[in-house]
Image (tube, rainbow, N blue to C red):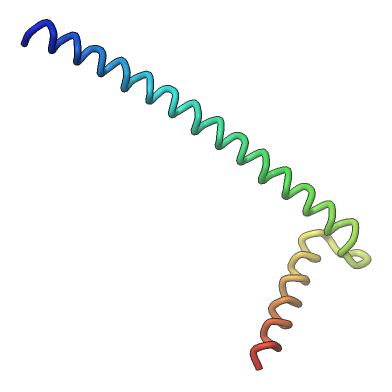
Length: 80
């Protein structure tokens, strides 16, 4: 192989390697941001349910299950 081809291959390997490192960093950063946003939303949602939608003695999980069940019942009633 000529020195020109060898040099081009080394450059190409360097560019691809650099791109993959950048891509990995961007994807990992996005995943961290996404995870934080989802966890934050979950905390806000749970607090809202706890504050405004739970009945006395009911946990947040029980309130969510009750509301989901009630919504299913309402949706079933609309179909008839």
